[in-house]
Every structure is written in C-alpha cells, then in structure tokens.
Amino acid sequence: MSPRSVVIAGYGMAGARLADEIQRRDPEGERVRLTVVGAEKHTAYNRVLLSSVVAGTMRPDAVRLHDDEWPSRTRADLRRGVSATSIDRDSRRIHLDDGSTVDYDALVLATGANPWMPPVEGLEPGPDVVAFRTLDDCARILDAAKLGAPVAVLGGGLLGLEAARGLAGRGNLVTVVHPMPHIMERQLDAESARVLTRKLEELGVDFRLGVGAARYVSGDGLKLDDGTHVPADLIVVSTGVRPETKLAADAGLAVENGIVVDDLLRTSDGRIHAIGDCAKHPGAFGGLVQPAWEQAAVVADLVTGTKSASRYRGTQAVTRLKARGIDLTALGETMTGADDPTAEVLTFSDPVGCRYGKLVVRENRVAGAILLGLPDAAASITQLYDRGTPVPEDRLAVLLGRALPAGAPSASSPADLPASAVICRCNAVTKGRLVEA
Image 1: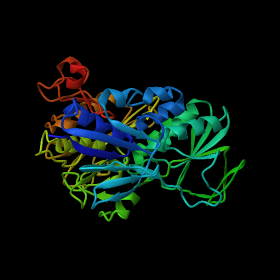
Image 2 (image 1 turned 135 degrees about the horizontal axis):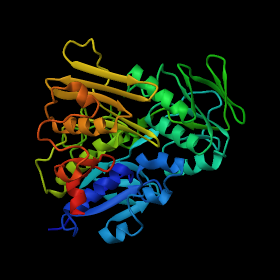
Image 3 (image 1 turned 90 degrees about the horizontal axis):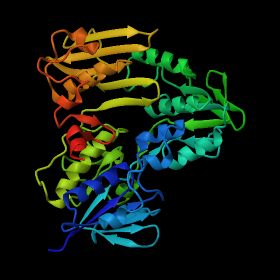
Image 4 (image 1 turned 90 degrees about the vertical axis):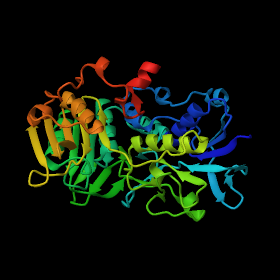
C-alpha cells in the first residue's frame, strides 16, 4: 500500500508540531508522504520565546524547533521561503508562488495569523515601526532599539508587555500605550492589572492607559488622542492579530473570523483540515499555543490512521506572562466577581509586594484564577484545574499555595507527580515525556 500524500501549508509552530506528531506516529514513512510548505526562510521556531530573544536572554538559534538536518532525517519534503497561492480542490492540488504544484490526499492549513496595524496617521511598517511577530521582527527591533533610546510599545496585551519588559531590561526607555483602562484586559481583572502595572513600572516600563495613538512622526514620536506626546525612536506594534484565511476563502471554504472546523479539525471540505491561529473552533482560544499542540495531535492521529476516534473537544486555557522578574498565571474564569452568587471568589492583594491572588471555585472545582507573584499557588492551582480535583476546604490556604488535597503530591515534589502532569505548556511536555527522554 502506497503512503498517503499529506501536505501542511504553514511551517510555523502549528505546522512544525503537526509534522513532528506525524513523524512520531509514522517514523518510517510507511503511511504518510509528508510535504511542508513555509513562507519564512527560517527553520521553524518557537514564537512564545521571541520576547526572550528581544530581552537578550536567548539567542535566535536557541528558539528553533527543528535543526537543518530535520528534513533529511525524517524524509519530509520541506519547502522554505515558498507560499501556497491557491488550492484546486477538484484536482486536490495546491499551487505555490515558485510556480510548482503539490498534489495531496489530505491538506492541513496551518497558515497562522498576521499582525494588525492600527489605522494611525504616519504609522507604516519600516525601520522604526515594527510589528512584533516573527524572528525577523526581533532582528529589526534589536537593530533599531539603541541602548537608552526611547521606545513606544503599542498594545498592553501579553506579547506587548513581554516586549516592553525585554526592551526595558536592555536599557531602553519604554512607554506602553494602551487604549483600554487597564493592561491585559482579556486575562486580568482591574485590581490584578493595577498590581502588575506597578510591578512593571518598578522594572522601568512607563504606561499611558486609556488613550490611543493619533499620529506618528518618524524621529519624533507619537501624538496621542488626548493631545499629549510620547517620544520614540522606535514603535513596536503589538495590537493583535488576524487569522490568515485568504487561501481558504479563495478556495471556497467556510470562513468566519477564522477557518471554520469541526471536532475532527475538518474544514467544509472533508479532505482539508485547519489548525492553530488560522482555525476557528468553539473550544479554542486565539493567540495561545496550547490549542495548536492539542489540535496537531488529533490531526496526526487522523491522517496517519493510528486513532480514527481522535477528536478535538477544546482547550482549557492557561496564560503565563513570560517576562524576567514576573510570575503571572491566569486561567479559566478570571473576570468573575465576588458578587456572583453561583461561585466562591477569594481575592488577595498586596500592591506593595506586587502580589495578587484570585481563586474562583464552582461546584468544589477550580473554575478560574489569577496568580501574580505566587508561584507555589500557581503550580498547585494549575494542577487542580487541569485534573479537575476537588479544592481543599481551606480556600485561603490554596490561594496562598499552602494546601493541596489529602494524598495529592506537592507541587515542589516532582518525583511524586503523575506522568500526565504537564511541566511545560509552551511545548506540551509532560513529566512522562521528560522521563522517557
């Protein structure tokens, strides 16, 4: 029996992970003949760690997911620096921008997302205006961010704050401009955001909140919509992304702020799947890598035939801010207030010590949490959340990281953790995988 031709359009984190999952299930290439197409010339790399590259704590080659020998070692047909331009669904063939074509039995779209540039007068991509999304963006930022130079970061979300912290740590004068009343409004409530803002200010980051950029003048800076001015030699744009769906839409696939997929990650064409930031599934959250990892495992099960019953049912999102000197975890319901009669909500705030804790309990299970400067509590509560374990009666002790269910392993005793415990969410590494390696 000849192997099926599986083509992955996209060689970012989702596409590279899918390729690895397929190789893991079919190491000899007996079931799948794999082709991977990627627009960037780099080998696949971990976007989650780009803020560490900007901060100078990691070298660019340290964030690579594959080495240069990966294609020959796995017998995959890897085509870098090439993009898919169209899909011929009738012939089951994709056309590439180098003029070549690739036939497929199964096609997986892992085209990711593109940064969104806000409509600000004078704000155009260039040497001093960089969207923070790719490894090349990191190089441009580091080339333009001279030591001591003022830098403005547009966007107070997760990625923007990581970039701001990294640049401040390198010696730049950083100002974050964010139009919402507080930072990370998708993950944090107002009080936790206030405490985090104070912590970042102590680390050298300034903030302009509740105002937007109105005009940018190169070499001068930003004029804000309240009439004030922010000096900046460099603008780092981190104002969100938009799913890359043009290839799918042009092929007539169902698109609705993302490529619509079912629990098998199939699009409206059963031979075409979509995963990662380009895909829209009701149980997935955009901008996080964990859903892409879980989706890649499901699609690998299906295209290799190793587990035909595999389904993607959604992801329990856990968000962590990756910035030196800050320990922040947010998961589940973070906006639920103490006035909600259907939930138990405990909060602890220590602005001076830059610590904040919030625990939301429903039906004796963790439903949500915000944990800033409380690493022991973050480890314990994340375990409770992942495993659906009943929350101990002393909720305050749990919030402070001092209590676990009777007989449960301590977060500080890795030898006692179950093999299924997730150690690294960015790469979906369990304790069992570490032991096996």
